Image (cartoon, rainbow, N blue to C red; front, side):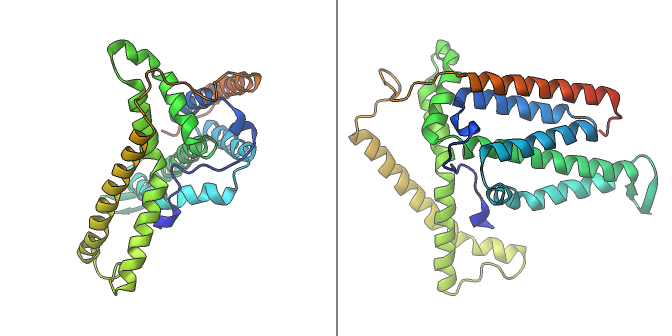
Length: 271
């Protein structure tokens, strides 16, 4: 399960999404996440699903990699669906036992919420799959640059966010390596009850914390040796420029918003 976490990974490619300006991708991804919450009917949500599948195809990121980003959240999705099934009432009642009810509206809401979470995860994953950590840093810094009026160190904030995202795959690999080492020494990490498994994680988190602090120190030392002083006076090898493809994507997303609103108006709301 640990090895299935793919947050923060970048997939090398030359697709339409890879070539887009990182700033525009940030804005459009944020807009798409809002659109998902604006969906009130199955038809508007289905439109978002079709668009998400189209975006995955356009990015040329393997579906296997996209599914890998969903796998760690399966338990959360199922738990959310179960809560909605038995605690949302309305419509025809199919089953009832004490305070638990299985109703038509509960089933519809459970399916709707599960699909919504899947769309949110896939759209968010495409941002990191198609954008390098360097471009992410530059995009965040440019978008947050108005905050510099309030004497906020935007570059430092952007660097912290990007480093945190960048080192998620590294930490995942470190956890897997430590777990394999503990298993080789006879540690039982996947047997016993919840309390036993929780106690078994202690020998994993202690070396992980030590390794993380050591890695952070090495990174800070390397940045100091390269005379890194922050964003002041810093130049960039690649300059960000909006191109026609970015405006085409923006128009396409605007049309998607119009479609969602129209479908919400003409079809019955689920939630």
